[in-house]
Every structure is written in structure tokens, then in C-alpha cells.
Image (tube, one colour):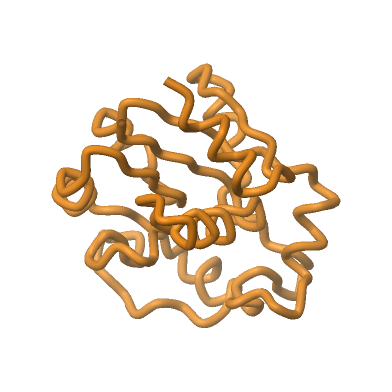
Amino acid sequence: MKVLIFGPSGSGKTYTAHALQQLGINAFDDPDIEGLSNWYDRNGKIVTEPTTADEALNNHYSFLWSPEAMAEFIDKFSDIYIFGGSGNVGSVFHLFDRIYFLKIDPEVQRERLLSRTRPTPLMDSNDAGLVIWGGWFEDYARQLNIPFVDGSLTPQEIFGVISKP
């Protein structure tokens, strides 16, 4: 079974993927997949990864996945769980048997984004405050009737939901 779990920044994608890896499950966070993603300018040219949210926003950069790279990667596994999100996440839906949206309460999300342990804190805020990457994902998932999973569950509980036959 090939499963995609997407959601906004701070929803727990990275944490859950890495916790499941520790349990021996084929779970991957999208940055762990070589060649999957790049930042692009508005003309479709690959650009250097921005170091701040302001740089990405002011330059109209987009974080996008390569559907070909995703297909090649997931074909190596019979069972795989991919956690992540991109501006073109829908372009890979056809590659997966199941798709879930990782939903997080806005207050919990805010706490997570402001955490000192956050790996990329400069990408989560700017002069205007918090930047919620992928905030549109929830509406998108709702429009497509994609099942929601509570992002406040433990990784094991999330796996229990997404691995049901």
C-alpha cells in the first residue's frame, strides 16, 4: 500500500515520519527523498533554497515536487508512507493508493512553529508574524473529500489510522 500524508507546516509530518522510521516502517519525510523537490521562481527556473520566509514570499518562489522522482522512489517499495507537502501536491495523487490530510489545531500549530527546536525557524515567520506554509491544503483536501487525520495524535496512533486495510 502506498500512502501519502500531506498537511501544513507544523502539523507533525516530519516528526511522525521519523518516529515511524524508528519503528522500522517505510515512512519518509519529503526532504529525505533525493531529487524530489526544489524551489522555483515564477518562471519555473530552479532557485537556491531561500533562507527566510520573506525571501521566498518576496520573490514569489514555489516549493514543488517532481512527479517523476516521486514515482521512481515509491516504486521501490510495496508498502510506503510519504509525509510532506508541496505547491503541486495534487500532481502525485494518482501514484498513491490512499491519501490523508494531517489536520492540526491552529493553537497547537502555532506552538509547534514557535518551538526553539524547529529546524527552520526563519522559514516559519516574517515581519508580519507566522507564515503557515500550505495553509490552503485544508480547503484543497476538503474539496477532494480526502480523509483528515488528527495531527495531535501520537505517531503510533496516526499509523494506526493510515495503515488500516
